Length: 250
Image (cartoon, rainbow, N blue to C red; front, side):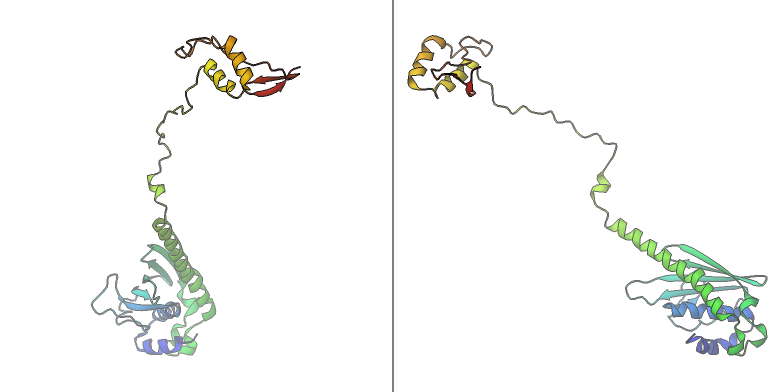
């Protein structure tokens, strides 16, 4: 418990009751966790300054102690408002983490940890100091750090939230874009037959033209199927030429 004896020695002239000694112990525990006292009261004052010592007037009210703290973290500033209220023989300690607005509380029985008959002797004033330290850490320090971690995580998620999520509406009906038929226009089959015949040998082209291609069909309507050449018989044994290739005949 390095530093507690020096702190108690500096505050001993003003310690007049058991709750004063208990608040001094809580203050020391916060200092070891990186906090420094700013002043007393709920609101900042002109005389506020960071210090590891208890501020002037810290125990003016024996039933209500109000102290403000600030962390020494260089990356960010964390302020803490501490209130200790006496209820009979118990002290209820409330701590408000100003950034996350998280409140934690701890109730201690003063007689269990402070000997009121030895307030002037540091080595005898505190009882069960290890248990007292454990309860302060588990009841105040850890909950405060947990609230800060949750607050930082929430801030990060809001800051780096993808922009698309702000515009996304699950109930929005997407616009309908009719499909456009981009297939090339279909030529009449008798014209397609002429194209296929261009691949035939010259003597077969003349043969097919003589009895399959009608005259004056270039101006036919697409519905007129006169002159369609579905296939062309070839003198190639068991094979038949069609516009789709040569195939075997059963």
